[in-house]
Length: 422
Image (cartoon, rainbow, N blue to C red; front, top):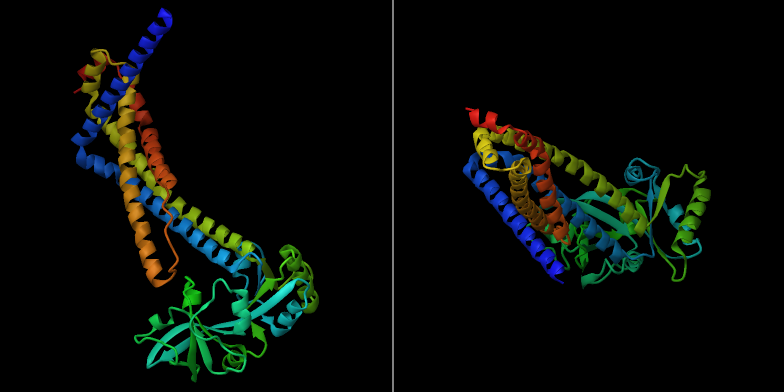
């Protein structure tokens, strides 16, 4: 019993001594940084620039990914998107440009596939739109709107007015933000000029949250074919799968029927068939690659910051050679010298990380405010505690690694030689 008590007392004393030691080491490191304010600030400049870039870029790309995911969740898991083009990954996303277009024949082919419930083709062009002498350019989309609203029921809902009817010709359904394109408010009954044709606004959609949708103008498909001079082409085909049907099977059936109808071989298709989940994955891959490239560029700043810390610490060791000799002469061990200088380097990196995290959050929130007011109204920057801890930890480690060799050099100094140093 007495032995256990003695061991406990020894452990408590050791813990107390360790705490006091680290307290003094950090106190000394902080004092040394404070004594060289300007040099310290210039040393950590590249560190906080790098951390600022990394925190803001990760926050924005993560937020963008979450926003896109929310939009696809609204669309629903039973949706299929058919687009022109070919390839995989990023090639598939950009393969639609210059590709063989989809046509009304393809729409009819898809309608006959087992498991298909609703087919909604879209014909989309960027066009000049005039309203009371104001001019703007936006997407004008030809659609059979009843079908489109049924397919995208959780995204496209009418807020004011009514839907387009089959017999309508020069009528328009507009996105929630179309009136922001003009100086004057666009309301129900307003007249819009598209390709020298006057269209009456009969309905306004609820806000969806993406610029392609909220700034778009929807007109009847046959009218779009007339003014665009596109008798058969379609830009995209949206498909809703019947309840109980396996979506992967329906995708395979669609691909086979389209290959047969277009006389194309497997692997040589001029069309792409995605589920909403697959399309979300493609966007995720693109965002991830962009994020990696940007973070890689920002990391160069951290490398420069690390070199700056190492250079500053080497200079500090030279300036404090006599001080180090005195510390050794009065009993300081090599490990004490090394820990003191490592703590100083780590604090330099950590201070840079703290400033960088604050600036990174500020930039990310600024981007959120700008994008939510101008483009993606649903966008939000994703600033998480894990990201902040990563930024702080990374900056501290960079500081410690940069200060390792100067600290080791200081620890190896001989007391006599250090005391003689002028």
